[in-house]
Length: 79
Ligand SMILES: [Zn+2]
Image (cartoon, rainbow, N blue to C red; front, side, top):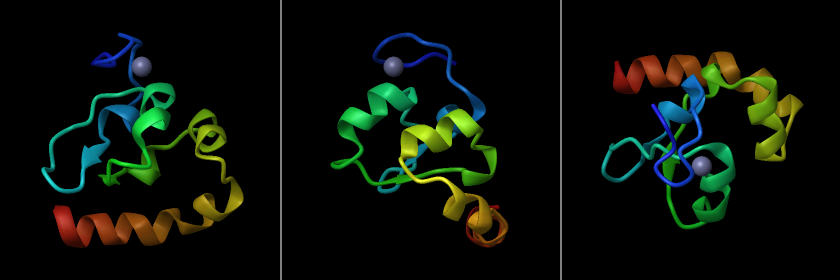
């Protein structure tokens, strides 16, 4: 899976990011997504995030602590 915008290879985290309204995959790398994140509501698989993803999110430790909660939420709601 490649970024729709710049054709970079997507990580698992980037490839599973979905539009929260349409449930379609966004298919953008973190860099390109950063340009539109303020206008596109998304569902992200935080459990697939890697350290490089956290950096681009601009938040670090709090996400890591929430991962188990988010996993439970995702399993409950979408699986
Ligand atoms: Zn890109």
